[in-house]
Image (cartoon, rainbow, N blue to C red; front, side, top):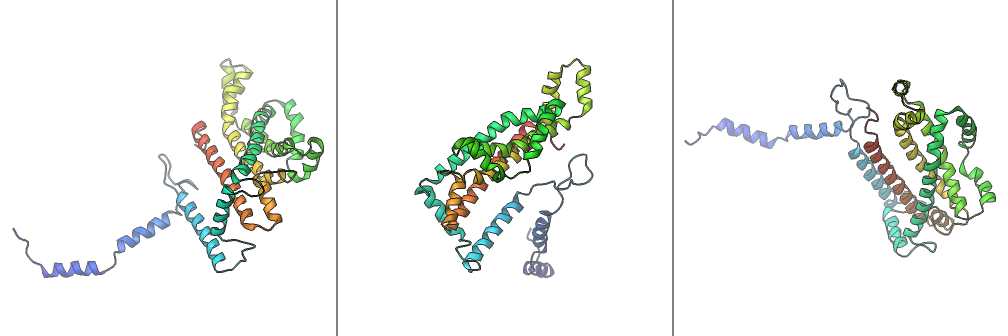
Amino acid sequence: MTKSFDPMESVDQLSRRSKPNSATKTTILSRFTNLFAAGPVKPGESYGAPGQGKSLAISLLTTFLLIFIWYLATQLQWVKPLFLPSPVAVVQRFWEVATQGFANATLIEHTGWSMMRVFSAFVLALLTAVPIGIFMGVNRVVRGLFDPIIEFYRPLPPLAYLPLVIIWLGIGEVSKVVLIYLAIFAPMALSARAGVKSVAIEQIHAAYSMGATRWQVIRHIILINALPEILTGMRIGIGFGWTTLVAAEMVAAQAGLGFMVLNAAEFLVTDVVIMGIIVIGIIAYLFDLFMRYLERKLVPWKGR
């Protein structure tokens, strides 16, 4: 059967086609506002937890917006290139340093030296600061020995004791690694100690009541429950390590990202300075992402 022609229905269809789709506009607006709304409610909760939900889209949008403002400021010459080169100039300098080098070393060589210094100090701090922090939490004698030392030098900036490190250890690689090691040691030790203090006393009493030894309590109860704080201390410590890198490479360094930034600053090569800062930030951020991944795998109960 053929459908009968309804003139009123045709008029309604034409009017709907000619008007803008309000439902589409509402959907776009709601998606934008949802970016800043509370996260979805988990099972068993009445309201969304503060800060819950994904923020990747907002972070990407913020990054692109900052780069665009940077590009716009340089194109419109709001800031002189000597003080703020354009993103294009920084990318070009990145390729030039990566292929031809700067200060007698390529970008890979500068990055390799800096990573060797920072991660050597990080591994040394991991092997020493974490055990000391744990024993500071479980033993008053160890706490009495190390607490005044750590609390005394922890607030000091690395540049304050850099001359003393040079006097004691010289200007070689050992002094650079030790300086970064001291910057990483304190936050890692204190985080491990805080992790021990956060263990519920009921779990310790339950383990002792079932016949566990002191070493078994430390290994299976205290260490496991302190692991989230230890991982947090590792994230904080590696941040302090990269912060101290520039100070460590001020002394008789021949290569390194901090050395490259300082050398470029002396000759007012601003694009190399910004490029070095970006490379340091990217490496530190990638390691932080790796530590977050370890937290999700090793301590999935954290925050729950």
